[in-house]
Length: 87
Image (cartoon, rainbow, N blue to C red; front, top):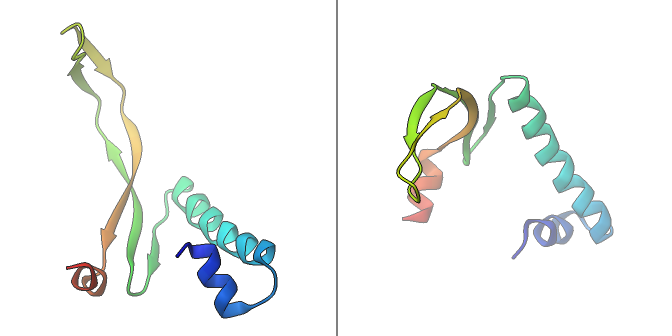
């Protein structure tokens, strides 16, 4: 079941309103991460941003060395309840 369908089932209203609610939650998470913040959702986990250092990688096709710049990457740490439910 899609998240929008589940929200629509619980809240009622239209599917468009349910989709807007889901989009707002996702936009809120992304906005907080862009600012370098952390988002914790009880029972699910913690979304955060990690700084990845610059490194030298290898192009698998040519074998040539390529310099990869430092960057921020999203990180997710699942909650214990979430990990246990998936097992």
